[in-house]
Amino acid sequence: DTAVSQTPKYLVTQMGNDKSIKCEQNLGHDTMYWYKQDSKKFLKIMFSYNNKELIINETVPNRFSPKSPDKAHLNLHINSLELGDSAVYFCASSQDWGVSQYFGPGTRLLVL
Amino acid sequence: AQTVTQSQPEMSVQEAETVTLSCTYDTSENNYYLFWYKQPPSRQMILVIRQEAYKQQNATENRFSVNFQKAAKSFSLKISDSQLGDTAMYFCAFVGSNYKLTFGKGTLLTVNP
Image 1 (spheres, chains in turn red, green):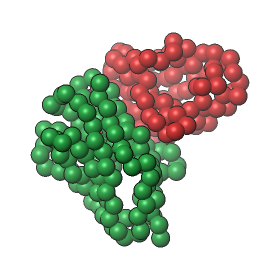
Image 2: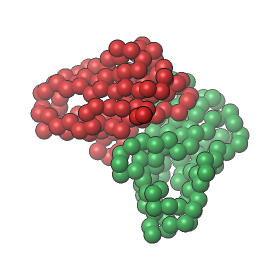
Image 3: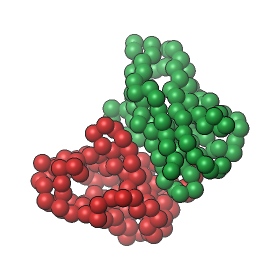
């Protein structure tokens, strides 16, 4: 029944590793997003896809690469992880830009 | 670029009382949407209320209501009959035609018994 799900919920890894976070929504929405919440709780958009097409690509290091195999999934792959990548990453979805976005439970990433 | 400002980093209220959280924003657009999201200690981001800029009527959802002042670019959230479960971080957010949901820095609300 979960509307927007993310796996894993927690991720602890070493600097330099590559990791992926998966997101799936069963709401039938056309648009999906990735947000980063830093240690001060500030939320910032990273990427957005609409029907598998990238529509928002904020100034994010190119070590971050989103992939949308279909409109229900938006995965986030991070290469060469750095200490500063430690944060909570949220996936979200909405039917359109002006409509409410529904968030996943978040993935807490800790880079050691 | 749009900006969202929440000037109250922390607030507290007694159970059953009313509290108002402030939010101002800056935009040159005429058509946009405003939101309040709640993030309890569980970390889940929960939509509380949504307001369309073209609607003059203030949105309400049970104990939650907003005071939307378009000319002043102000969007405050009023929580009536506060409950312990309302303890959370509250984020004001804006989305315009660029599709980007821009958040304020949040207000940590504590409801005391």
